[in-house]
Image (cartoon, rainbow, N blue to C red; front, side, top):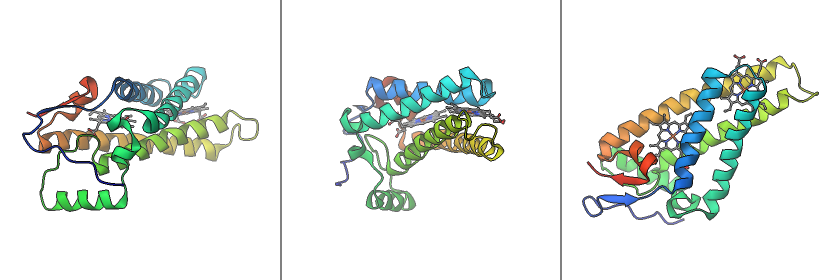
Length: 183
Ligand code: HEM
Ligand code: HEM
């Protein structure tokens, strides 16, 4: 897969990157995950519906990764070993890259976060089946995956803030407006 061109510094101050689907997907997913972790963590009906909604959002995002707009597509940002390698080399050498879409490390984190949400959907669902109902190891696994998701999401949010400073681009605002703006 060829590496997509980087934004040249100063050449394009504002770049439209995230379409409405990506933005609504992101903040709805965040709302579902945080609500299920901090507010309704009792495993009852509401928790299950919110958990399934989060899983459905991820499934839709995967479909959108094939048919969506340019920077939403996996082909635009899939973290292949060569993309990851050149990104890590650039970071180590202190070279600042301005990726129009996700940078390779961010893309890797995105995939891990989505897989983790699906893992919660599956382990949550299994707990509701006759075969696995009341299985303590499954409850513990579900809880472990939920804690891992929180830790990863914290790292992800911190990385977004750090990269915003390094790239002098407000990446968090871009997830609301769709536009990456340099400051
Ligand atoms: C965003 C996705 C989800 C998150 C963040 C999440 C998180 C959690 C957390 C933190 C707990 C409490 C664990 C404890 O302290 O014992 C829990 C319990 C539970 N969750 Fe989820 N969950 C999610 C999705 C689901 C789904 C989709 C289902 C089922 C359809 C589900 C079913 C349950 C059940 C049955 C329990 C109770 C387990 C017990 O009795 O200890 N969860 N979940
Ligand atoms: C449970 C918490 C979270 C989850 C599961 C999550 C998940 C994701 C996913 C899946 C993406 C990829 C978006 C896409 O292409 O569709 C993403 C991107 C992003 N997230 Fe989150 N996120 C969480 C919390 C946050 C928070 C709290 C912030 C704010 C600091 C944040 C800021 C961002 C930004 C700025 C991007 C785009 C990064 C870039 O420019 O490449 N996320 N997140």
